[in-house]
Image 1 (cartoon, rainbow, N blue to C red):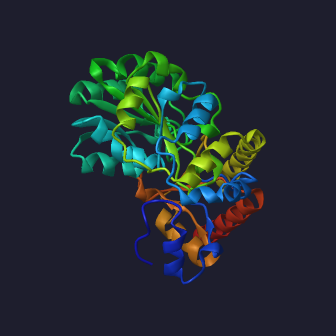
Image 2 (image 1 turned 120 degrees about the vertical axis):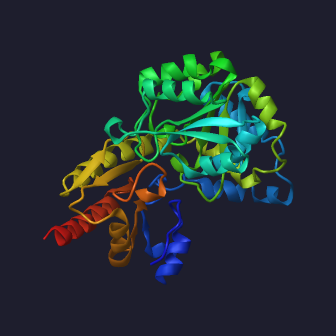
Length: 365
């Protein structure tokens, strides 16, 4: 079937290779809110449709203000981008980095963005036995050896979905930002984990940078809106170097609208928590599967040697059930025996569980 893209959610390319319509594929490879965009967003777009004849607000003023209020921060601590990926690519350039410590596995665009800018990367590969999260000892050893100008961590981790331990968080805030070092925390999925953000530490940690996404929690990957939270000084420096009009009018409208949808936010948290627990149980009941308990809207599973590889499973599910999962081999630091699935709606999760059960029966017979 050929190589599939290293990112999740590319249903158009996959559908083309399978000679089917994208709508026929049940996408478990991209971890997007299964409820879809908040109700009323379509009408909000239409209400402001005439704004499209003008350039977008170059300073994203309304969205910046709404984000500041939402997070209880100053508007001078918010920087908005055309999706968090745009900000990822600008970070090493704006910070003028020459070296960084990257905790893996993580979102692959970080490695690409930093290497394009010539940043020398030290890689800390986390262990399955620790839920693919770093320990203080591992971080301290890597910092002592490589003296990086920045440390990049993911909270919750991707693809395992676990949160950084309290001692690691304290170490990052106490030691990680010493010697003029930046601490970059990817919080793209933190909205699924109430109360665990680093944002309360921004006031006393000037070199702390938090990357956030509105794509995942609000189900709007096609709109492209992300942002970062940091100190006023860092935010001013970054805002002054970003290109103008990078955030579209529709993206600004969507961002402001989504932040105000309290019922939708609570419904999302409830649904994802319930379905994650149910899906974790169903996956764990399959012979040869080890599921890593996570806090986000996805689950990572390991397949024992008694089973074929995750690539074989992925291709089988595509051919037989039109279900697309994420092959763990696309994450630097995992391998061919891992796969990740999103948490979706109950009936969809039952369909996935049934397909996995049929496959396991076949290959273990």
